Length: 75
Image 1 (cartoon, rainbow, N blue to C red):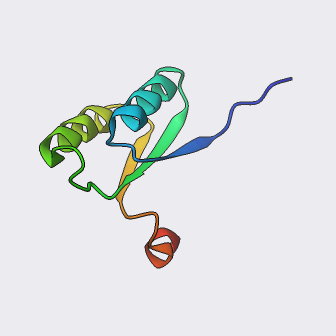
Image 2 (cartoon, helix red, strand yellow; image 1 turned 45 degrees about the vertical axis):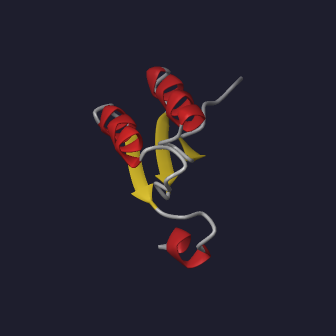
Protein backbone atom coordinates (compact mmCIF):
# COMPACT_ATOMS: atom_id res chain seq x y z
CA UNK A 1 0.00 0.00 0.00
CA UNK A 2 1.36 3.38 -1.00
CA UNK A 3 0.52 6.44 1.05
CA UNK A 4 0.74 9.98 -0.21
CA UNK A 5 2.63 12.57 1.78
CA UNK A 6 0.43 15.05 3.58
CA UNK A 7 2.49 18.07 2.60
CA UNK A 8 5.58 18.66 0.47
CA UNK A 9 8.05 21.48 1.17
CA UNK A 10 9.54 23.05 -1.96
CA UNK A 11 12.47 25.42 -1.68
CA UNK A 12 12.83 27.92 -4.49
CA UNK A 13 9.09 27.64 -5.12
CA UNK A 14 8.98 30.83 -7.20
CA UNK A 15 11.80 29.73 -9.50
CA UNK A 16 11.39 27.84 -12.76
CA UNK A 17 11.80 24.30 -11.43
CA UNK A 18 10.09 24.93 -8.08
CA UNK A 19 7.06 26.48 -9.75
CA UNK A 20 6.57 23.57 -12.13
CA UNK A 21 7.10 20.92 -9.45
CA UNK A 22 4.66 22.69 -7.12
CA UNK A 23 2.09 22.97 -9.90
CA UNK A 24 2.39 19.26 -10.77
CA UNK A 25 2.00 18.20 -7.14
CA UNK A 26 -1.01 20.45 -6.64
CA UNK A 27 -2.63 18.93 -9.73
CA UNK A 28 -2.31 15.53 -8.01
CA UNK A 29 -4.03 16.88 -4.90
CA UNK A 30 -0.88 17.04 -2.79
CA UNK A 31 -0.54 20.04 -0.48
CA UNK A 32 2.56 22.16 -1.04
CA UNK A 33 4.38 24.58 1.23
CA UNK A 34 6.66 26.79 -0.84
CA UNK A 35 9.55 28.84 0.44
CA UNK A 36 11.64 31.30 -1.55
CA UNK A 37 13.73 34.31 -0.65
CA UNK A 38 12.71 36.05 -3.90
CA UNK A 39 16.32 36.86 -4.76
CA UNK A 40 17.06 38.73 -7.94
CA UNK A 41 18.60 35.87 -9.98
CA UNK A 42 15.37 36.05 -11.97
CA UNK A 43 13.18 39.15 -12.23
CA UNK A 44 11.26 39.45 -8.96
CA UNK A 45 8.09 40.40 -10.87
CA UNK A 46 8.24 37.05 -12.69
CA UNK A 47 8.57 35.20 -9.39
CA UNK A 48 5.67 37.16 -7.94
CA UNK A 49 3.52 36.26 -10.96
CA UNK A 50 4.32 32.58 -10.46
CA UNK A 51 3.41 32.81 -6.80
CA UNK A 52 0.10 34.48 -7.64
CA UNK A 53 -0.76 31.57 -9.91
CA UNK A 54 0.17 29.01 -7.26
CA UNK A 55 -1.66 30.92 -4.53
CA UNK A 56 -4.92 30.56 -6.43
CA UNK A 57 -4.65 26.79 -6.08
CA UNK A 58 -6.10 24.93 -3.11
CA UNK A 59 -3.43 23.39 -0.94
CA UNK A 60 -0.63 25.91 -1.53
CA UNK A 61 0.95 28.07 1.14
CA UNK A 62 3.99 30.31 0.76
CA UNK A 63 6.60 31.75 3.10
CA UNK A 64 9.18 34.29 1.99
CA UNK A 65 12.28 33.12 3.80
CA UNK A 66 15.92 32.35 3.06
CA UNK A 67 16.61 28.69 3.85
CA UNK A 68 20.07 29.69 5.08
CA UNK A 69 18.37 31.59 7.92
CA UNK A 70 17.67 28.77 10.38
CA UNK A 71 15.93 31.02 12.91
CA UNK A 72 13.46 32.22 10.27
CA UNK A 73 12.74 28.63 9.22
CA UNK A 74 11.85 27.69 12.80
CA UNK A 75 9.22 30.45 12.98
